[in-house]
Image 1 (cartoon, rainbow, N blue to C red):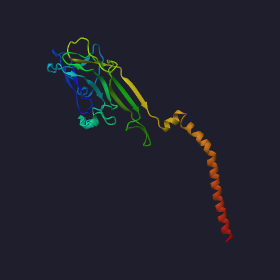
Image 2: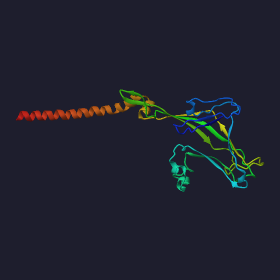
Image 3: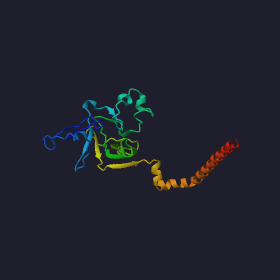
Image 4: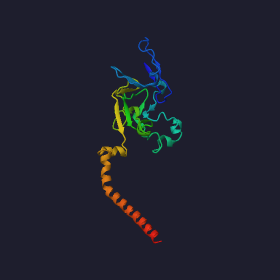
Length: 253
């Protein structure tokens, strides 16, 4: 079975193909499944990424890097991913190579096609879900038209992690015996989804956490209440004095 799913573009649909020579198994998928990316856990599941080299390349020395990027859906980055200048390739501030969203999965030592072969390199993939509580733009609850809470933002990601098959130089090594020059990369799927929940606290939440709004405000009110009463009495005395002086002046006339 072969699924090709460009899931970074919401308008795209997957293409399903039954590659069984006998034509057995699933023959088509629903319209809903065409827009979803599924990882299913079942016994005996195995897949690999395989690089094969033409015989004309025999004798050529080469090495290989494999990266994963979280910016593939940003089509205008790095001059449309053409890397037309060194700045967009490997500058520390703006380059793709050092970007926090770029992950080096593995690199190999230098080897000769047709004469040597790199050991199998396992690529590990795991699903993750991040929930940002109340950080959406849609109002979840409101009181008298005033927004109180907002909806959650849920982000689902497929995380590729760096291979562990490397030496002290961080390179995948050449096999002791060569069977072919094919570079095999088994993909190890971890079907246990890790879920992270982020809750953001504002001032009201902080007050509620330390004993509720009333319990938080009352100490301040009790501290300032005598000062407010004293201020009120002083202002009242000033007004009474001014009225008394005005009344006395009018009577003298």
